[in-house]
Picture: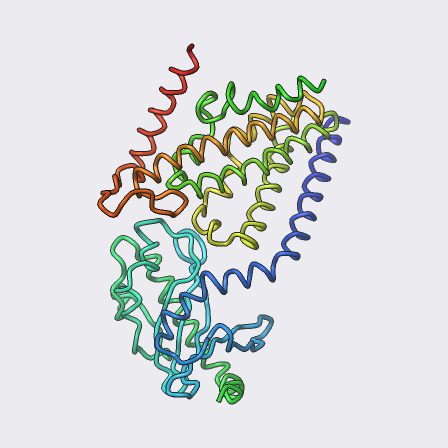
Length: 196
Length: 197
C-alpha cells in the first residue's frame, strides 16, 4: 500500500511540475510564435489570396471580438480602396485541424481566394490541399453566403482524389468563414473605414 | 574523476556514436537528413532533450520508484521535447516547418529513453550530463555527415550554397527515402572498415 501511494505521489508531482513548466513557456513564447506564424505561414497564404493588392495586408490588420474569441482580419486594398478582407478559420481534417485563410470581397460577399495555412494531413494525399493550386482555385468567385460542399455531398467542389476528408474540412472552414463574415459584417465595415 | 567524465563524453563521439555504432534512432536519421541544415537542427534539438532529461532523471533517480520509472522518464522527456518544440516555433520557425512531425517524435526516440534507462538512472548528475552531451553531439555529427553526403550528391548544394558548376546534374535518388538507406548502409560499412584496424 505504501508503495502504491509513493508511486502515485511521485508521478503526480512530476506531471504537475511538467505541466506548470510547459504552461509558463507557452505563455512566454505565445506572442513570438504568433508573429512567426504570421510571417512564415499566414503571410504567404494571405499574399496568395489577396494577390495584386496595393498595401501590406499583414500590417493592415484589425481584430474584432466574436463572442469569446478575437478574430484577426487582414485588409486587401485594390484600386486604393479596402475591398477585401481575409480571415482564418479551421475545421477538423484527417490528421487534426486544417487552417484555412479565406479572402472575401466586402461588397459582394464573394470569395476572392482560399489558401490552406496550417495542417497535419498526410503528405501526398491531404497535404495537396495546400500544394495543389487547382484545388483551392475552385473556391474563387463562389458566394461565401452558402454552404460549400464537395461534389460527393451534392456541392460544387471537386474533392482531391483520395483526400475527401481533407477536402470536406476546407469546404467546412470556408463556409464557417462566410458565416463569421456575415455575423461581423457591421463591425468589419466600420473598421474598414480606418483604412480608406 | 575528470578523466572518466571526458571518457563518458568522448565515447558518444566515436565508440558509441548513436546511428552508426548503437544503430539506434534510425527514424529521424533516415527521414530528416535531406540537407545538412535539417540534420544538424534535428541533432541539436535531440541533444537539448538528451542533456536535460539525463540531468533531471539522474537527479531524481533515488526518488522515482522503479516500478513506474519508465512512465516517469517519458513524462520528463515529453516535457523537454515540448519545450524544444515551443522554442523552435518561437525562434527558428522555418526549420520547425521543415522538421515538422519529427520534433514531437523525439519523445519516442530510443536513444533518449535508452540513455535514461541505461545510464542516467544509475549514475550521478555530472557523468550523466557528459554522457548526454557526448551522445547528443555524436548524433548531431552523424546526422550532419549523412545530411552533407545526401545534400551534396542529391541537390548539388551544401548548406544551401551550390558546390558544383551549373553543369552538375543532381543525383536526386540520394534525397529520396531509398537513398537514405543506401547512404546509411555505406557509412555503416565505412565506419566498420575504419574501426576494425
